[in-house]
Length: 131
Image (cartoon, rainbow, N blue to C red; front, top):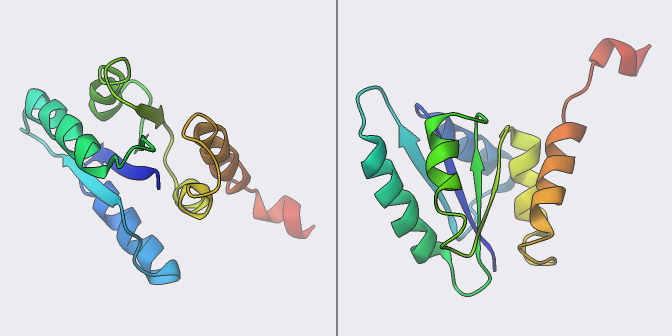
């Protein structure tokens, strides 16, 4: 099973996992890392590498981050060449749910597209939808 690591600014990663669990219950091989004010970015890099290795049972790990160009994204990007990792930015709850629902059915290389599709499909102008 593909591992899922959620890495964000502040406690967003922990909170989005709790929100997902409220709807769908607990999921294995799912972890959160946070970057708070004053945290060392090099320590976050060490943690991303460590957690990625823990979560990878041979199928790889997808890392979901909140913001393109932010420290969680940049740290993860520096791991992409050396690890069996994929990374998608722009984390939202539909993205996380889509990844968790599909990670046992498809390859690591296909999962980013599924993540992006879920994230984009979860963004809807409700006024237009109900009009």
